[in-house]
Length: 305
Image 1 (cartoon, rainbow, N blue to C red):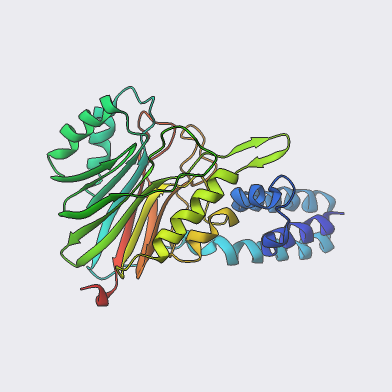
Image 2: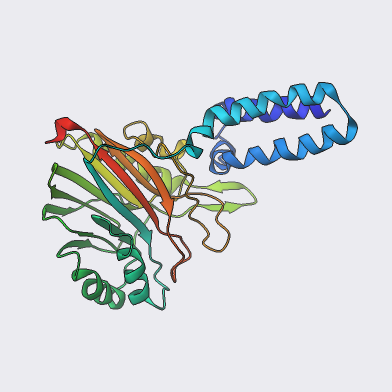
């Protein structure tokens, strides 16, 4: 039985895309917590040692190899992008954040080039404009999302990623161009709809639709280099984000689990790029939000100049 469970764990890791999404989006639910299948190896190892089962111990090599292949690289040290890099911070600041001033100070302490924020409220926006404006003279806000930058921004516009089923006012996307020392970079900031785990499964249809609209916009982007920052309400393994992960590079190093802040289980705050490399991602200290901020280093291609 232990050997069979080990084989099952390995199969779920390797063939997670084969788990159907037609009923309750079970496949996406599995993929949201896919790295945690590594805990099954620990439990099965303890049971195998207790039972002194050589067969189970050998079988455990399968899920160990599968997990290492999928996630082992995230544990390696971040590689040096060679000086052509940008540091970015992504944070859902929460519309219930009682201390946006402290949040702004915490984000600026990471000394990023770009700061992307979601769930901005009118009152908090004034605080972020004041606190971040000292070090980030350029900023763009559309609806509840915004970007603060050390570099000039141009061509800012609202990005329509609103699912058809949402009837109330909903503005959660923007596109702009940052004029960096290494060349112009198209920057997208997005906040995709939330997902809910219910008795019937994972409710993610709005999130998936919004991800598809965002993917189409990025595919049509004429700028060679693109950076996407946002609360995407999904992990990079979740097939619901395939319209994005199929077009953009994701972080090479770091888990950076960002949600919920009290006990992070998944990274749903993402940094992705095209014609650039997200060399590493990490979490920053907790703020007044239910998300942890994430900081990433992005290495730009030589051809970007």
